[in-house]
Image (cartoon, rainbow, N blue to C red; front, side, top):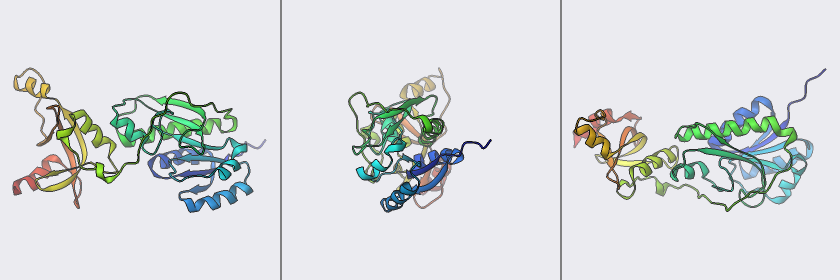
Length: 278
């Protein structure tokens, strides 16, 4: 007896969330087209008309899809959006980064039916993904993998979506003006989370010894730890020579960085190469 055919999908998406989701989906479905730009929507329309049972799945597309194209997918549950937050919280283009900056330590995803209003469509499913580290790449990967895995298991029986409940919150698009860190204006925890949230883009930067550097790895060092260490009560010396003094009198210790135009290096190598020139 022949096995059930793999579901066909038309995929919409760009960036790390889309890449991670598509990696999972492509193992258990036939991806007949990957739309990346607005110009691809003409091909989407043509393929949906010739493949009426194909599902539309979207993850971080960033292009407006008009109602007439949404209607083409009505018979297969609409275009199904994997959004990396628990909606209606963190609607918009930067949900993961905004959650990191807000101080969140748990992260979740929503599977929703795309609508003409931004991230406002009804929900098929939501879940929190436990034990994700405070690492931007790992959060993207974890949420995309969990959401895509759920979709594979439920594409043929999505059920009826239900409206979102609660007051929405919104995120904005990240831009390069956020790049330069300002430790005098933020606490050490806030600067540390900016370093995590801005990895990849807009890239967290700070100037040491006249050289602008992209900050790659860091950790928080609290003044209480330094006082205990000085008193011989606890802790051990921190070996990194690069520290940002923050508004709450705590520090962010830079352990790995990349001078602009150069390769990444640890902080000790950086100060040996650049600090001696000043």
